[in-house]
Amino acid sequence: MKTINLFEAFSWIWSQHLALKNIWFDVKIIWISDWYIDAIIAYSINHLQIKEIEINKKEVLEYLKNYSLSLDSKTAAKNLNWLSSKKLSIVYQAIKRFWNLDIRNISWESLIWKNIDLFTYSFPCQDISQQWKQKWFSKNKKTRSWLLWEIERILKKINHLDKKSLPKVLMMENVKALLNKNFKEDLNLWIKELEKIWYKSTYPFIVNSLNLWEAQNRERVFMFSFLWEKEIKEFEIKSKHKEKFIKDIFKKDTFHQEFMSNKNIKIIEKEQKYWIKKAFLEWFSSFNAENYLYYMNWKAPTITASWAQSRIKILYKWNIIYLNSLEHLRLQWFDEKFYKKLVEVWITETKIKFLAWNSINIKVLEDLFKFYLS
Image 1 (cartoon, rainbow, N blue to C red):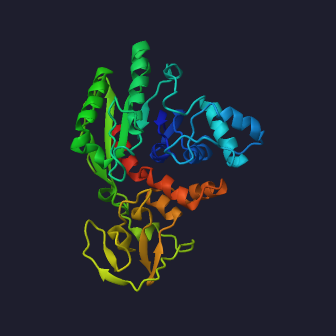
Image 2: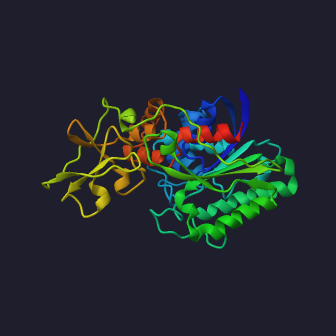
Image 3: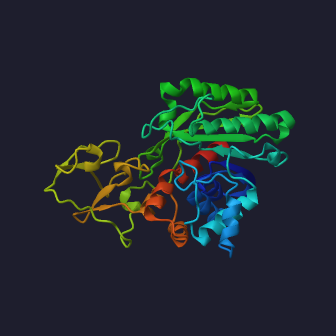
C-alpha cells in the first residue's frame, strides 16, 4: 500500500479521499478546505474520525465567530445559534485541527515541508454552471468561482520560499460549462499561471460517467498538472467494472416519496437517447424538465442540486416515485454506511441530496487516479 499525502481544497464530502483509498492508497490528510457546515461534518465523521464531544455551546459559538462558515454553501452564516451541539462540536474540532478551513485564509507557511503528493481543487461552479448566472471567474471579479485564484496565491508563495514543498500533482474538477468559449481566456490564463510555477498540465478534458458504465449521465471537466518535467498522457477509458443502471442503485426497502398530482396526466413514451429512456407526463407542468419520467432498466440523467433535475421521477411497479437521498449518494458510489452517519448527525434528506449532487463519481476518480498516479 503506497502512502499519498493529500490536500483536498473545496473538499466537500470525501470523494477524492475515498477513491484513493479504494485503489489501495494509504491516504494521509495534510489539509482540507471548505466552508459549508454539512460538508465539513460529513468529511469529519468519515475521514477525520471526529465524534461528538461535550461542549460549552456559548464558548464554541463565540470561538466560531472568528471563522467564515456557511449554512447553504453560498453565503456566510450570520448566526449559528440554531445548530445542534452535536454539529457544533464536530465543526469546532475540525477547525481546531486545521486552524482554518477557509481557502482565503489558509496560510501558505503551514504547507511548507509537508510533502504534498496530490492537491485537488473542485472550485465553486456557481459562476460557471449553466444552472446559475454566469458571472465568470476572472481575476478582477470577486465571484465565488474566483476562489480558484486563491490556489494561485498559495502555490506562488510556496514556490517563492521553497520549490520542493510544492504539491507534486494537481487535479482540477468542475462542470462541463468551464470549457465554454466564454471562459476560454480565464482558463488559458490559469494554465499559463501554473506554467510559471513550474506545472505542466494536460489540456482540460471531459469525462462522462456513462462511458465508464455508470448509472448516471454526468459530464465533468478534469485537468491534471504535474510538477517539473513529465510526459503528459491523454486519458484512456479502460474501466471494466460491471455496468450499472437505475435499478442497481435503487433501494426498494427504503422510503420513497410518491409523485402526486391533482391533474389528469397522461404518460407519453419518448425515444431513448444516450442509454437514457424517459417518458413525458402530459398536462402536468409547463416546465418540460418537470414532466420527465425515467425507467428502472435505463440510466439516470445528470442530477443537480435544484430545479427539476433534483427531483428525479421513476416508474416502479406502475407507480411514480422519486429517487431518495440514499440513491442519490449511491449514484456517486457512496454506501449506506456513509448515509446512516449523515442521518445520525441530523443532516436532512434535501441536504444529503445536495451533498451527493455536488460530489464527484467515485469510480470516475478511481480510473483517473489509476491512470495518472501510477
